[in-house]
Amino acid sequence: MALTVLDAGVVIAFFDANDPHHDAARDALTAATDAQDDLVLPASAYSEVLVRPFMRGDTAVDRIDGLIDELPARVEAASRSIAKAAAALRAEHGRTLRLPDALVLATAADLGADRVLTTDRGLHTPGLVVDVIGGA
Image 1 (tube, rainbow, N blue to C red):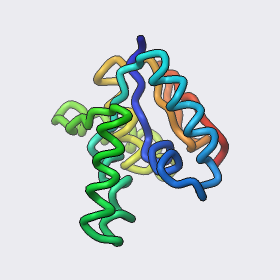
Image 2 (cartoon, rainbow, N blue to C red; image 1 turned 90 degrees about the vertical axis):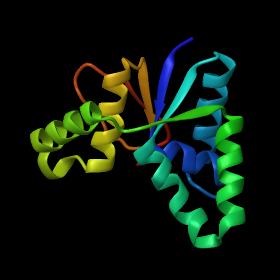
Image 3 (cartoon, rainbow, N blue to C red; image 1 turned 45 degrees about the vertical axis):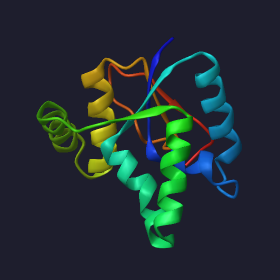
C-alpha cells in the first residue's frame, strides 16, 4: 500500500471518456486502487477538477464529487507549510513550473508520498517519484 498523490489531469482524464489520457488514467487508477494505495487529491487539483463541472451546473459538480469519493481519494488541504514549499518550488523553477503544479508537488513532499501520478511530462522534482501516464 502506497501513498499516491493525484494531479488534476489524471482525475479529469479518468472521468472523461473523450480525454486522450482516459485509458491510461483508468488503468493507472485501477492499478492503484487494486493495490489499495491511499489516494490523495491536493485541494488545488480538486479545484481544477471542478472547473468544468461548475460550468455545467450543480448536478455535474455533485456527480464528480461522488466519483471522487468512490475512487476513493481524499482531498488534502493546502497547509501553510505546503504553500511555503510550493512558493519555493515556483521561485526555483520560474516559469517552467506553474503554481498549481508546484502545489501538487509540495503536497506530495509534505505528506511523504510514494509517488505523484500525472499526465504532465514537465512535472518533476528531485526526491519525488513522478509517474507520467499517457503524454502531455
